[in-house]
Image (cartoon, rainbow, N blue to C red):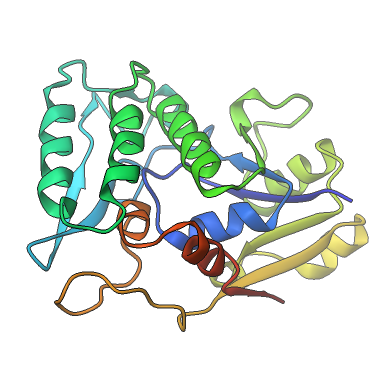
Length: 235
């Protein structure tokens, strides 16, 4: 039995992304599709002074005509020190700061300039910290898949090539996939519904949901993280 999930690579994604990773045996970063500006591939949100703050990792000559795996980070790495300073200022008083900040620092200071590889490394490091043992790979490195296929056909193609018996997507993807097509190929199609009941205490301001995993890690110890990871239902 091999359960698979496929998502585009996102930078320091929200908790639901990690819940999906934790649910499957093999998680594939869909990096051989076109980069799309305005998405969460190279940006995310944290709390600064009890307000939502959006940060962005600058890219070099990014274009929607390029594949994600073809995008490079900006060669001028001065943004790294600025971002780390912002995170330290934002979460210096958070209960898990001393444990989490060195992890975030190691991820951001990584020498990798390729966007997909940078995110791949960051997800592996974050999952190791959170106790998630799922294998993570990139679609661009897979063998025996047809790069000309798109949409549901490509997903099915990858599942078959990887000999998956199950495919899991987030619940908002129900309109994208035909369960009968998956079942007819011997693949159980399931959708992950994220439960909103497991909130955590941030600072003294209002609770902001679906922020970067950075925010989650700063306020939750390992026990709480495991509870948050388990807060989902497979349909």
